[in-house]
Image (cartoon, rainbow, N blue to C red; front, side):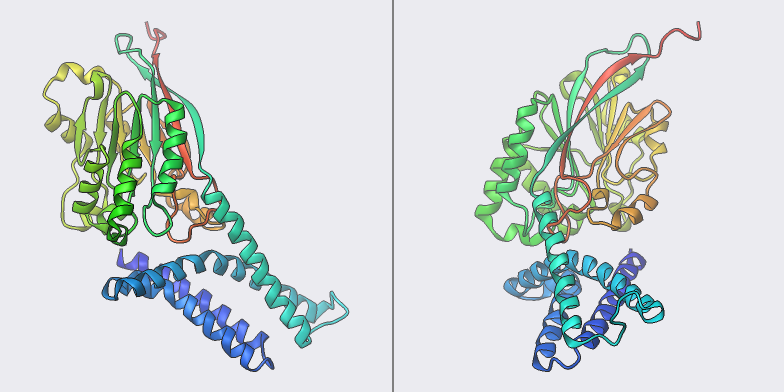
Length: 394
């Protein structure tokens, strides 16, 4: 984990050092205006790492300011960097083959226009991403469970929601949007697949937390709402999140199994984060053996909830009909999606290994910037139905 965050912050520093150098050189000759712009740039670029690493040591107001400023800065930073690199490539080519009639060095007016154009385009892309992040959609998929002839054949309408990331940008008004969309679908069961809460500052505002709990408790389904923890829930504090879910009428499964309505075996796995905290994560087989005494129900379809979509073969080996996961956000921001797609066997959508189906959702919320330029925040509706393996071998 230390190596991962070290790499992320290292890349962040390189991007901002490059951006600062280009901004400082481009605004040469602009006097006090250059100084003001550069100081604002340094404040914005420093806010994210300082707020995320040291914010808990600061007064609440300063902590909130740093996280708010830093989060809002990330998306325009990415797109300004891409546009700046493109501009530098054009500038280098223009100096060699004179693409324009005005090869470098460019006049002050041209340089000012380039800075303002890059800023305007970055803000425009970010604004579109903010709108996208606040308009969740419902996606529907049919999933067939291949099972023996004598297995239960009833279909099940499953709502999957992950990565809400309750915090500065996501609260009761957004959960109401989710509840309204969800309840229109009339699912049989609701599965919350981790990262419900983004940071502990969410719990500072008691009235806001209570209203969010009421909105969460308004999720309607025949078999109830069930959840597992995600990595951010542990970073926030498992005790606080557990209490929040209890008051929201959500049943938490931490390395435990249940049999809602006697219709499915629902297995909830602790997130991989617990292993970095010194705890042991149980296997799916151990969870079932310890949680379910009646072996006669083992013929029911098994659904596994596991926040991070790593080691997918574990669910296949256990004979699960379906595993649902989140965590990846589908990348959330272009071009981060290309990096995320290389990190996972499957980073978004439906997938199948052997007889086990997998669905990795893009998530219903955002982390960091309240922006999505890849994918939509979603509620996934999975219509799980029974398909007999057939008699081809007889």
